[in-house]
Image (cartoon, rainbow, N blue to C red; front, side):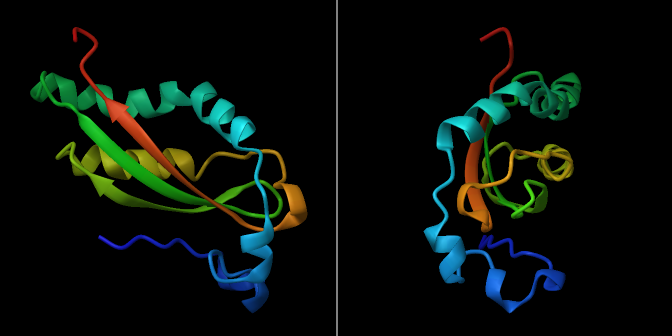
Length: 124
């Protein structure tokens, strides 16, 4: 599956994530982003827990790519890969990520983040 979230058309041709010079120059604070995601990991876990009711041994990884706008809002998200086998979890993750608002990226451009969410039952 190819996943390349792009900024909404309203931001103009100069800020197409992954293609504009500004997006390539932006040097995001990776520790800040990782810390932010870890602070919201319970949201991801809330997406996963319902599947355990019907598939108690469900486990896997869902790699999500999302775009942080110059204002810090996550405006795009997509699943790059998933071996969890639970489309409802994938969809829930995308919805949750779209509600996030991070600090403004350094350099003022778009930032594209790839993040692997790993899920294993709590009893493992």
